[in-house]
Amino acid sequence: MAEGFKIDQRHGKSRVRVARVWRPHSGGHVMVEWEVDVSLFSDCLPSYTSDDNSSIVATDSMKNTVYGKAKECTEELTLERFALLLARHFTTYYPQVTGAIVSIVEKPWERVLIDGKPHSHGFKLGSELHTTEVTMKKCGAVNIISGLKNLSLLKTTQSGFEGFVRDKYTLLPDTRERIVATEVTSSWRYKFANISQIPPAPFCFRQRYNEVKKVLSDTFFGPVDTGVYSPSVQNTLYLMATAVLNRFQEIEWVHLRMPNLHFLPVNMSSKENPNMVKFADDVYLPTSEPHGTIQATISRAMSKL
Ligand SMILES: O=c1[nH]c(=O)c2[nH]c(=O)[nH]c2[nH]1
Image 1 (tube, helix red, strand yellow):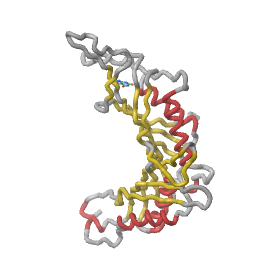
Image 2 (tube, helix red, strand yellow):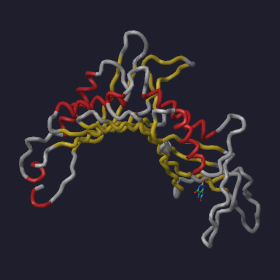
Image 3 (cartoon, rainbow, N blue to C red):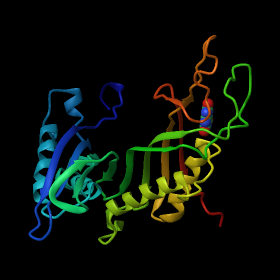
Image 4 (cartoon, rainbow, N blue to C red):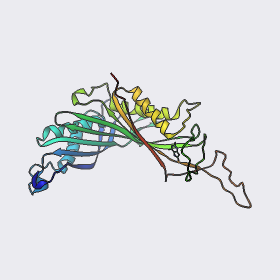
């Protein structure tokens, strides 16, 4: 590299917002809203070291490509497949582009039900976000990570925390009865390492996303009547992630980040009224900060041959 320096670089367009509506002749409209980030690894070093921009793919063109490709997608597709399609385009269309990272966040528009019947063209906003990050090299090597954000879960019982380190700074009492609440952020890697390995339909990334979300929340809650006791957020996180890995062989690892959103017992008293509010697992002060943050990536252990 010139002048004894080394440079690692990529450039792209962030937060490209696009909505796509499909209007099939039979049945209701289908719509998605995506926020797309594109970042390209490309051979354009002269643009950093001189005034030569001749090999730069303009980020404006990247943005336009998102809209152009959305238009070309005449059939409904998932955000993972749209990210793959964009990454494939950028890495094959431009000789100087050696790799691409395409990240997409989908806004949770859900079809409205009126008196139990799905509306043909009405949508309302849900809460969890479906995410993906596709990294692709020119040779077709891929890394497909999908995920979710904003999955808020809470249990009013069947949670405790005891037996932890006690020292001169410890005030927290042991408990076997508390509220546990969290807002799960998760990502998971699919094992497909090359575009040639990505299964065609009926494999559906959206269906897998919904199934992973269900396994995560079912494991958090346990059976409907009895629930399942959580001795710590750490243990619950581990059981959630391993349930996903046990169920879906094409998932290599699962990352979970789970804030512990504390619900503090309320006790209030005065000299005149010593028992104004005496906590009996009933009145809590919900808090958002500070909060615990428990996170881990769980992957399959290499088998010992
Ligand atoms: O489930 C928990 N894990 C912790 O690490 C922790 N730390 C804490 O203060 N409360 C909790 N709860």
